[in-house]
Amino acid sequence: MLQQRRMVSFLMSEGHPDAAHYPIAFLWSEATIAQQRVNVQHATTASLMQSVIATVLGGKEAHEALRRTLKDLTDGL
Picture (cartoon, helix red, strand yellow):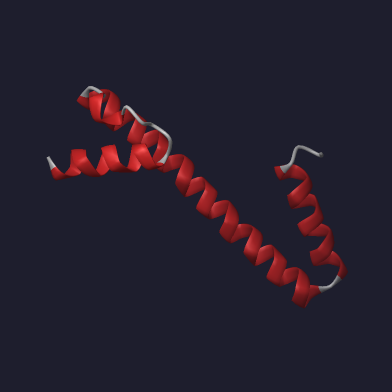
């Protein structure tokens, strides 16, 4: 029961206002998808932080790598 409450709370914080009314299987599935999305966001943030630090310490090659990474993340916008 506590795990279900955690999933509902997590989903509600991720923009699912009706999560408390989801069937168990749907709740689990949506929580898994949302958690994967959050994990990818954290990994992307960590990778970008590492790239920025490398750019500050590295010079031109590191700057170019960061520029390419940012371009890839924004689809060249």
